[in-house]
Length: 162
Image (cartoon, rainbow, N blue to C red; front, side, top):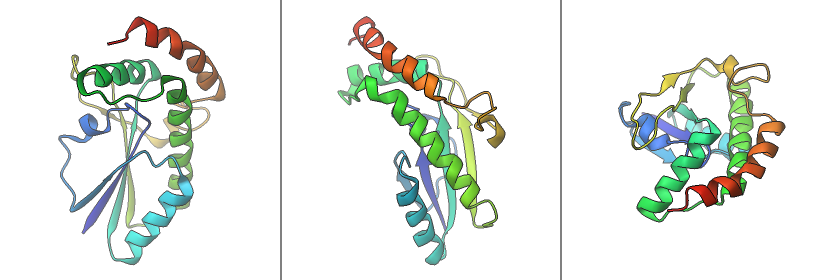
């Protein structure tokens, strides 16, 4: 039996990125921002005999902002835009910690995806190697990203309000 824990910041497009993947017996749709909680849930699943897949969806912050605004307009589901960059960075940090913690556990696997699309521009996500998320990798969120996009959030919110 397989359980899939979805991981990714708000408006990362987790549902879209995984819509063509095989459906596991059990799926948890969340962010996995809290690595301690996530490790506890993974350990519980392993103790119960489950195989675990962590499906992390990375999304460029600009696309996440626009995705959040589109979803707010279409569904009324809103997230605080100023907190979105920090959420994405925290989730990535958590997932990196989990990859290290479970690197030798054969019943835990990681599916790392880069969501490049939007609701209007559909695009299959790219599978990405773990090292692209490391500090020297091309998709690593830094404190500088978080600071910059925190400052940009109000501007984006005003420009794209539904």
